Length: 552
Image 1 (spheres, rainbow, N blue to C red):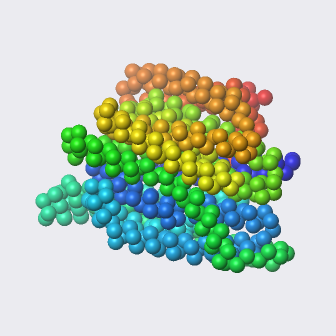
Image 2 (cartoon, rainbow, N blue to C red; image 1 turned 90 degrees about the horizontal axis):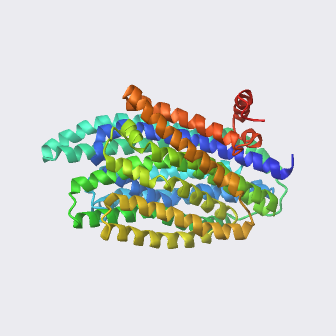
Image 3 (cartoon, rainbow, N blue to C red; image 1 turned 30 degrees about the vertical axis):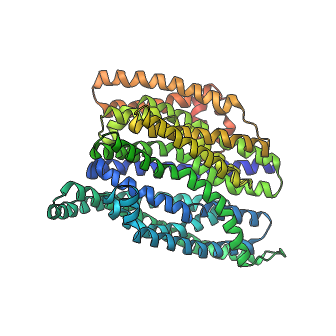
């Protein structure tokens, strides 16, 4: 096997591990939101979602880009045989993360009232946001450790810590929400606002789960590091490089790497805060009741976004594993490996993005009813309209990571600014002139992601000369997904006629969807033996496919 093939195989393997962990984490996150939504209601979801929007923006600004930057810097030094400097990157990054994470936690805790009340007109979110504040410091440290191991070309520690974090988050969120809802009712009874305080403290129970999960993730990553430390010290002793970097130089490089990534990521995600401000203010001016506005936003942030983020997380995982692999290939001027990894990563995410889009569109109403006991047509319409965002966000998330991996750090920043401006214009027009209320937010978000895809595609192709096989990357997955969608639509309706039970019809339809899509992809050669050999447990899938004569 050639070096390019080995690198490509390992890159897909590591990306698959992280993607599986992300999928498991997102599914766990989706499942616990079902009882959480039942406990805190749509209003509580609004408060929970508002607190998380503020938390996410501050997290992005303070430390979200740290894992990617650390993995990139560690990978570059390991590629050049500089283990000693790789350790300095780790130490310098921990100091940097402690400072930024500490400041972020301080700002969120002591300025929570300004963010939730003054800025976002949702004062009841203050309790949930204050609970989240310490999480910012912990996540910053965890991010450095995850980035360090990803830079060493292993995603297993990150994968296991993510799953453990989400499981603890799920359990604590539900238990704490139940306990704090009761406390909120008592407080609300005294202050004559039972529903408001019930939802507020219930949302705080949900954010307490996030804090608990982060603590578990930190403890796990520290345990992994101290077990790995002796092996890494032996690697440092074998380091014969003459280049010895100063900590001041490493901090400077870290900042210069983080800032462009931070700006692009911030712009990529700040649209949520802008959307909420524009939507709520215009909706109030148009005469909608505060309760209706709160419920709409609760569905958007607590149901719609949770659902579409499950498949989108796959692209985020591939992007995270792609950056150190691309950095190594870029440092070694290995253009063949570079192009191969870009092609493979795009194919990999499209294989998942297309069927997820079709499935969410066809089963929008049944899924909303199954998971959230929400039969409101407006909720289903959000998912139908916004399902295409899965494809566009998957491609744009990946292309951001690919551009950062080849040192085109400023390109995603410029593209994000352009897309954000156009996104805001689209949102204003749809709300002011077409009165599309919450649907305007869904459409504008899809437009933003689509613009990022187009804007990132040109510089990525120009810089790497990478070309996608249109047939295998886009056409076959799209056609297989369309056929799957038609089959699933018919299957669901037949099952409803036969059993009259949405749970049975929906779950069986999803199983049918997976089988139909898998068979179609094998028959249409959208997935080959070589593809299956590069993913975990791919040999088991090959054995089954051969027995069914689906693979030659």
